[in-house]
Length: 444
Image (cartoon, rainbow, N blue to C red; front, side):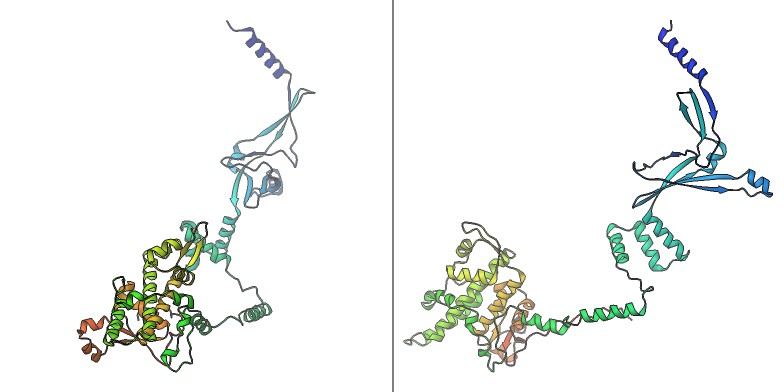
């Protein structure tokens, strides 16, 4: 049995429907507009502007034309990035007509207003500008423009970023008059007047190389470098060679140093009863410092430039505190600081090269300005090219072992090829300034 509630609702709705008066309002110039937004969302505060256009069908006769005139409506809104546009769909307006009803409770009547229906679409401004630019150039694009368009559509992020950067930095000179171009050229010339040339930069680079200061006016090789610029006074005082004087060479790890200390010890033994000369003691001390430099270079090379705290390095290298402090101060940079001796140090490639330059100068002093690089190359674990470059930087020229030297040293031809000689001669021969490499040419 149906409930009374349902019968009451039906009776009420039927009573209202029978009492409402429906009227149609005459169409005006500013009708309400019904908008749909399928697939997009309009910003809630987007201001919209309405536009109207009267169109006429292609008919003959003034009366027919006036009778069939039709108004087209458009809504437009814009944000900084996107344009929103609402247009009528011709197919929809030909077969459907939409109304908006306004209910007046005072008179219990509904007034119907014809409402044209528009459908919103959106357009990204940047894409529209690009399409307009392409259309303005015509159907035939240049090779460069075609590649750029393909890159924007299908290129990787890196390629699209490069295209955007190129477009942002492009300068269009078509609108510049002669006055503007002349002004720009003069300002560029004024700004670049004090820029150093390639030769000046190369000379400055040579001057800034971390080598002991050379005396370029020297007339003898022994006057080019001063030992005091390589080994400080406090370092010289901390170099002890008592065990080497007694012939105890067991602690020498470097083949280069052991060979020369043995040679000095043999020369001393040949002069029995003769007191040790200052030159002999000086050579031993220089070789001692050379041994420390070789160990320091090997130590940082194994750690790829990293160094432990100074106390740990002192135990690993087995050197005096004064020596390890000077080695760190001269050939390393402090990377972090901490309490309790936890400072961290590192050797950059430039400082590692500086260590090689100082070592090369000391080896030249020991070997009387002509060094056989073979044993030194083996000790340092370097290639012949790397070591010869270090000696060239301090002013040496590189020579092969001569036939007379090969016979005197009883070397085979293959062994002699492994031995290069670094010779310091007057006038000095420092490397020339680096030159800009020419562009590679294709094969003809």
